[in-house]
Amino acid sequence: MQSELDITLPAPEVTTGEVEQLVGFLEGKGWLTAKQIAAAIGLDDRRLRAIAEHSAGRILSGPGCPGYRYFDKTALPHAEHAIACIESQAAKMLKRAVTYRQRYHRFAHEIKN
Image (cartoon, rainbow, N blue to C red; front, side):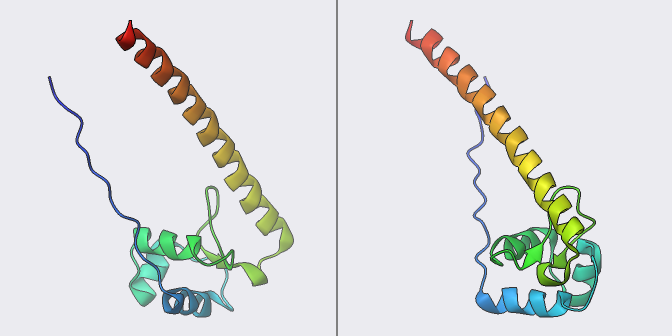
């Protein structure tokens, strides 16, 4: 029987300087893809996502977005669309977690009996 691998990748630590660097880079530009940002300032996808997550909402991105953008210069309909996509993704993930939790409890109950 094959056992599960216990692999946990730590989230990258993000500095205020990195957030400021990316915000400064995105200011005055439209949507930029991760590939464009990587070519210009050398951030890989994982690091870019981490910085955006730690930007206190200053960097807009999410499912359905064409890339990354400075939030304060984003047209309100684009911001609303991005927020709605994130909320939709969150609802799907929560529904999935509930399904897994239910299955987990059924499985745990069967093991005990």
